[in-house]
Length: 107
Image 1 (cartoon, rainbow, N blue to C red):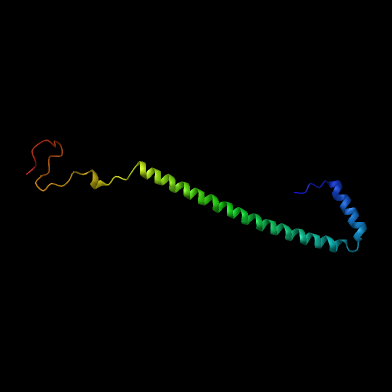
Image 2: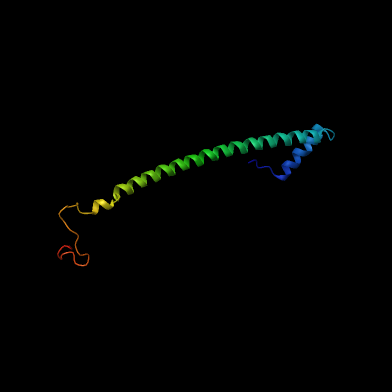
């Protein structure tokens, strides 16, 4: 995130040592460390919230695409019901021989 070279960091540490003094420097560094830790936790929490919103959006898009594909497939290939393919029942008809359907009806 921040592009700080080692020379720049050494310069900041030297100035902090001169300005703050060696006695108070550990307390200041601890305070700065706590502040940086809080900032990182807040950034992590924010990032996880954004990631969750992105995942939710992607799921909604996938569900919408799936529903559209499913509707298209159902339009192109409607379900075939077993009773739709059977001939209409005729009370006068008798079962025929399964080997030779053109033969005389069975008694």
